Length: 187
Image 1: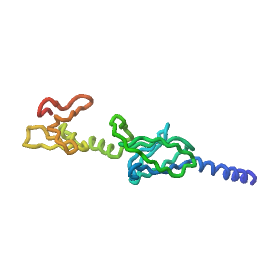
Image 2: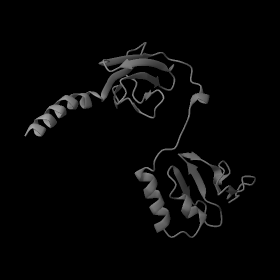
Image 3: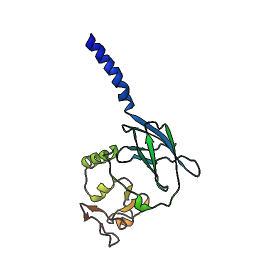
Image 4: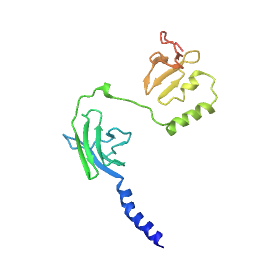
């Protein structure tokens, strides 16, 4: 009985500290001039991979184990900003200044396989393929059509723009070019 009481008292003393170990950082990112929300702004906890993006109203929530640190807030076309936070921070309103867009600052990285990506892999494995054009027909944003009868190469439209029989795009498989862009019908 006495062990049970000590265990219960110890649990009651340790439980609040375990709950307090998580810090929730809430805030909103807005344009400094117009006070309009910035949806899709990136918030990153400095030195970690923890972070999030703002919702359509510019709001964000980060649940972290850190009691203090620095948030790095960035949005395309705006100056990045660093904000300090502590476990006592309640709600942050972060105002970003507009800046010139520098395409050199944009960094695109790959992430985990998305459901659409895995679906495309299934499509490639299941569909019978007779020609290279049939493989290209399942590429998102690429539309291929035969025009003016057979015997000519397919007309390629990339995201709605006419790619002139593929001579405006370089298509390669394992680094080897599939189309010869030096001639009008180079497929």
